[in-house]
Length: 178
Image 1: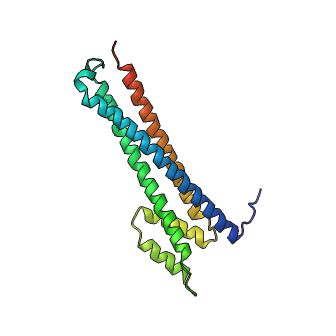
Image 2: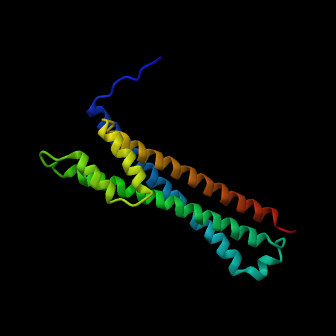
Image 3: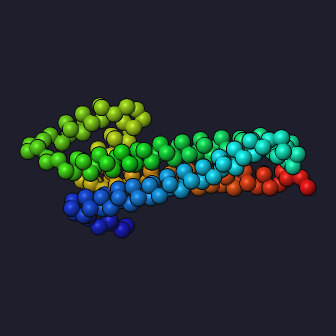
């Protein structure tokens, strides 16, 4: 049985900071890409709807409604992605601000984490509780891993959004009549 090498507290803190920074950078890039993709998709829908009388002559019936449904799906995925991005950006901003604050001498870290947990609503409370347990056990990279994981989930949401946009393009192309 292979044992994991022990990680020092300072290494764990550094790893957490790197993972948090990585998650923040990935999230920021994904938000920009996702936003532009949604704007492009909306422009196509807008152009079709603005010229619906002319467009309807060249489209198989139900093409526009199918594209509108796919657009709604892309918007839903974008909302989920933006929510994840908001969690990531606010978490990293808080981490940076807290890092600037001096830690009071003799602080009861268990009581601090308990108060933090009580101030958090469900379901986020479950994530806070889990992170707190890991940190109390000496895993100072836990918060960074969580942010990194959220950024990866966000990447999958953007990928699904991209697939939805491609599917809408395919529906539009296959719905053209000659």
